[in-house]
Length: 132
Image (cartoon, rainbow, N blue to C red):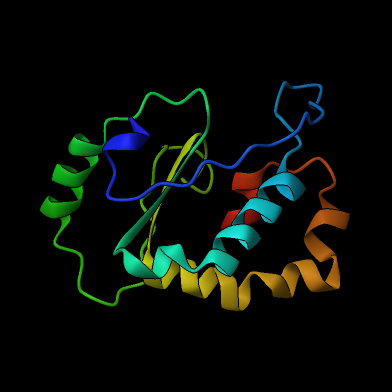
């Protein structure tokens, strides 16, 4: 899986609570992981950033073929829709261009700094936070 990528970083987490509908309340945990990625600047060396979770089955060569077929314009802020449900960005595999990650780092803190998102949705998962 992940070791077949051009680069990788493994971030360990901690135990988080679940909602009554069995979703993990992990927005704050992943927020810290994204901040770690921002500080390392490793994502700047690559066109795409892929976030996977520990229990994800992931075939990098398949994703590379799919990305090549998309012909994404250089410099585009793109994330891949990965589910046909609600905001179409959910789950254990999230794929974003370098520019989309940069945009998140520039603008994503606006929700967090005011505390709006986490206060108004205290049981949010990381994917809900990312889509805002």
